[in-house]
Image 1: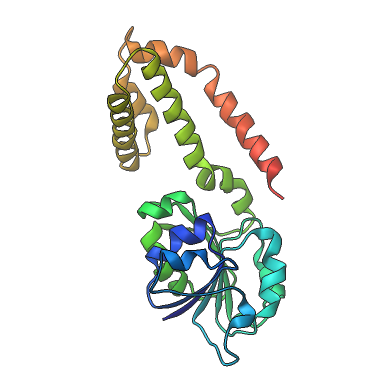
Image 2: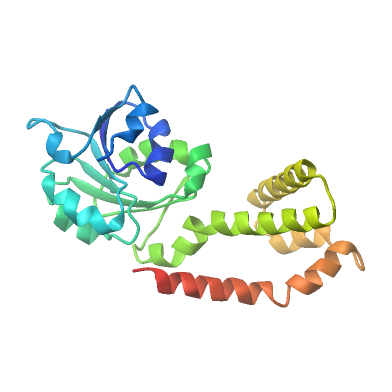
Length: 246
């Protein structure tokens, strides 16, 4: 399988190790070839051979420059984009030779194969290729409506940052109590990992929360502080995030 990967920023670097086949990466600086010596890097799509063909083009450049890169391509293949906020209609207009268009929104957890990949395909598109390419990074959640991307981006795409923030806050609280830093970090991370695994096996989060909360115990005392404020803060954060989507 041949793949053309446009862009090698944060997401491109996390995606490449999961891709297999004959891969060409477009990166102006060519810095990536120092780490991926067995992968072909070129500085610009104009450096592609005149008869170059590929099975898929993966768009991983910044959204602001998608319209500068795609029009240079005249390839008949599937177009897969992980560029935020660029719609499938825009992608089709920028690369009309594409045989089908798939839009994905992964998150940084693709690095460990646990990304929550939002996905949408234009009518009659073959989703098998996109699934094969991205399933190693985490499960794909196919959306019925493309507009759901904007609503779900803060939840699926940005949520790792919220988790990191909450984890950092708990670790800092432990450090203020004089806990050994290594113990604090390791125990809190493991607690979250175990909680995530439990949540993955049940949709009844209220029952899970009750299982941890004893009447008059330390968990209840903490929740009495968090419950009145955290849900409203989350809602405000989501509203702020949605306003920031172009």
